[in-house]
Length: 526
Image (cartoon, rainbow, N blue to C red; front, side, top):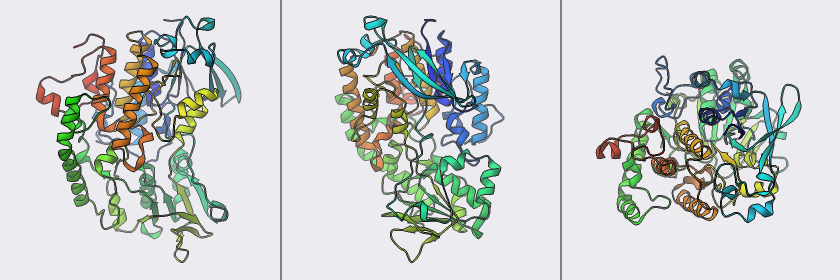
């Protein structure tokens, strides 16, 4: 085992988990992190950013939040301290090479033609490929850029774990026709990635006394708008321009959907006849629960007044991981006009003074700064990591389907590599830890993968599920939010342990599932 080299790309949440579980299995992993500290994306979040989950559902199963953190939804600084403490507790820093950006990975030792003849992943179904492959099997060559010395060095590994996430690195900025883009605007234009990368003092100086417009409807747009409103109040209001509105939830509904009963109402990938019939019969209840939540949110928040009622149901938005936690007193800022909410039904263009919405040139939004909170090109970032055009094509998949990952972890035709952190859930740390536990047992030889054809068939089943339930056509996000317990059941069965983690039928159906339920997973565990 010790001869097998495991390389991990990224030291965010998923990278730390992958490192901890690989090390606990006797490997000596090497972790490459482009930044100079752990935390990944959380090093690039705004001062006001808080968790989307209550902390009990967003914690390591073997390392609880310190009692000093009393907030129900900890903020970014508290989370970074928590992640650093986790790295210290399990002595992970010795495995991490900071300021080391992996610019490409290349699989060598096995030809594309030979891989096409394989019936099993890697030729044998195991983590490290088949010894029958030419030259004794394949390996990965990683080119790593040292950001301090400005040099590139190559490393070899028998297995690579990609933990680069999807919400960082490559900014998604809309394209504009000639003479209607940022080039004609007299003010400053930046992406939320650039804003969030600033230290607090620099960000405050940038927005102080300025009229800011934010284009976007996700979590970063809401958080930046809240910061701008706190800095400038209604003297220089912040304008948020959205094309698609999302359901924004409150602490009182944070635990909904985390029990097994809620998943009985959903058709699941690869389900049996009884499960399918049950989901069909309970579909009216699912609709009623979604409407009940929507009615509650419309009662608690002035959504109708500001034309912020989403077109998609709460259930559809949750199933595609598009719901977001609302900052406390956000709508107070809207009420006092520190934040102005606007809808764009068609298009946005620039003018010298600011922005023109839906072609209304007579009423431009006059601003000093425009911030694009329009997300990231996560698929392109992942694709660009591979040197092989063949692997780039594999990982990209089809625009009309989800990213083709078995168990949301491995591609059936890319051997000796796992991807942790691309597919989403409603509690990412919890899900990433389950995936890393599964991966650790796979690396240890506790089980092999099924045939390539069987894996591809399973991927198609998940693709159908995500298309059926995802809101706004966002199935490529590969969100397992609506069936996270069912998903964990599959991981448990692969490992060879009992997926039923509660004591008693009532608890099994109605108590929320969380990280503590999966402590000490092991083959044969009942």
